[in-house]
Amino acid sequence: MPNKTINVEALCPFFHTESVKSVTCEGIVGENTVTRFSYSAQKVTHEKKYCTSAYDSCPIYKANMSKY
Image (cartoon, rainbow, N blue to C red; front, side):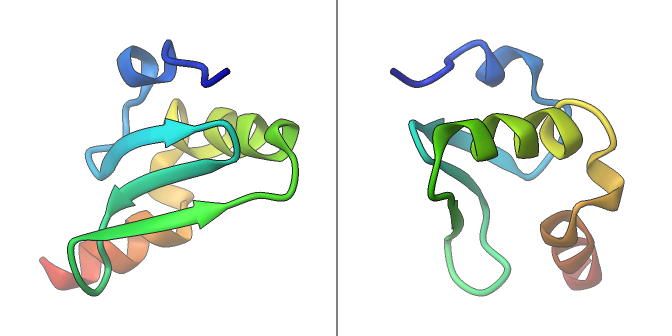
């Protein structure tokens, strides 16, 4: 089951939503960029590392910032 708490905790301005094994952000090229993980634990680790804290070090954040 997706961790819908992330929808409230996410600090990254490019975060859109998540599912069991993926995170969807504003698109680098196109509408959305979806990052898929093999395991849900990997996704949770990614969210804790980037989406809810140091998002400015996330590669997707950096790529999106280069558009602006």
